[in-house]
Image 1 (cartoon, rainbow, N blue to C red):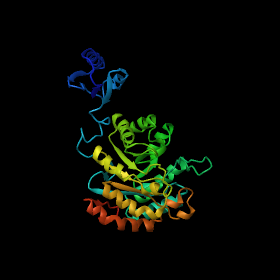
Image 2: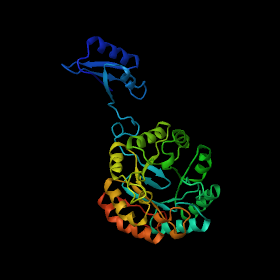
Image 3: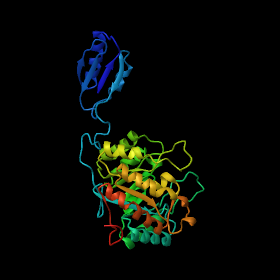
Image 4: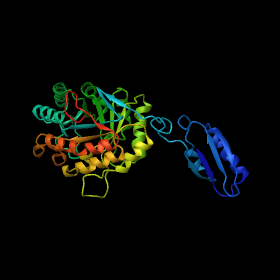
Length: 348
């Protein structure tokens, strides 16, 4: 870190700062200037106490980090991109994956039919919520264990790996027993205790960005998982809450580009939750691809008009297929190819 002192700081005060740097476990290197003096603190910022404490000294103006706070996922220290393996799917390479399925698991027929439909159209992973965090306690909150059992059956019918959300620490084991990817939703994105518990499973984690989380907070949440010994993390940009009311959330396309530039992790974009309306899925998907996304997650329901949650943002399997055909040239232009569903379906 760099400690910038206030103008015309005396040598005696500089010595106080240097002693503080040493006490915190770093080696001070002082650069004297005519007006400003700077103390460079050499040491591993991840294993020593924070030098931010030195801001309490009256002669200190700023304490500025040199290293990224998310060292384990940073391209600065790990320039090679991470590829996360989910079954036969390799996410983060030159193949573009699309996760699709219903917002909520509502019944066996609805889920299996939708799973068969999205597979036929080219999806490579199946999403579906067995446990649903809802703003209102009166809304449909999922089928719980029955929903997990239905997802397992849908995987058996289609061969598609399952992506489903885990809401609390006590549910991790049973969700992990059914799923192939554990999703951390926007409401739990900064629930660090939950992040450490899901990390311990060693399973692939899809980490959504919080409703109002900064990019740095999002990346640091991923760092929690990787620091706990699980490198299998995929980031998911799903829109953030802003003052705009034309869409449910605001898709932060710049965050996709920054996450790809700053971190080595794959980035998935969820245009369904960002828009909250199905008519914007194609342009938002194209924008995500252009920004560097490694895949999309799109909500699909066999009868969106009858969905128990988020019907306005879901599309039928047939419309989903038309979306894939529309975005395929953009995927190719981005230097990737659209993945093929296991056992057929999708573009080569």
